[in-house]
Length: 113
Image (cartoon, rainbow, N blue to C red):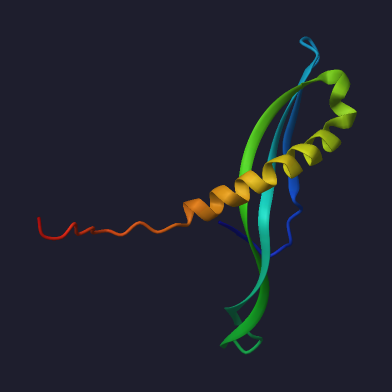
């Protein structure tokens, strides 16, 4: 779970590296799913130097970082490719998140034999 004070986009480009010799471009990107706005009380120091609580809007979300390589001539369509990939993976990732949040008990009793 990632927290941010700014609302993230669903897809963030982290880094792009072009290899002109090989005619390839490598893109590191993040898919952000399940973005939720929350209100949080945070302490701040006012003008008199006193600590006061202030409500701040925060965002919580699941972030998955990937790296893909494309032919350089495809560089201008990479945003559309990433949108398609994001949509295609969304259901699978949301289902896996639900499964990952399933709690397993620390102790399991079988009973008397």
